Image: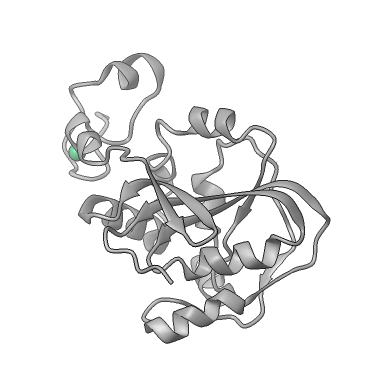
Length: 202
Ligand SMILES: [Zn+2]
């Protein structure tokens, strides 16, 4: 069976140097071009967020397809050429995924961030929870702001933590996790796979 691009569905019959010699890509070269890394550092008050993709139509539909339809093959699409970078840049850090709503996670039956980051060889932080099981989808700005006080950590003292989320809109979840973890860790870095071009800071 010829391999098809997971985004446009066309048979992949041309390759990039990387996809031919180093690592097979689930996207065709022209879709990969659309899904290119545009690294950005976004200030969010007292910390910066490193982000890789604009939340544009291709990123949005790939993430949605992965999260809601659990198209397993898609999990390597996001960090396709970033795994090595992350392993080196954040060597010695422990990954802390921003928790999804428990209800949503049960509905999905899997943790999408854990799967996307499965090739990132950093230890995972356990013990962070939401106080109230809130799902952010469809929340207005006021309710999103409440997320900043909605996390609780019941784990060991940490040295270096990398907080990770899939996508940043207002930054309220990242800020909430940061506020919660800062008394438990010496060093903290923050990462979001994607950012919306218009990001509201507060
Ligand atoms: Zn394609």
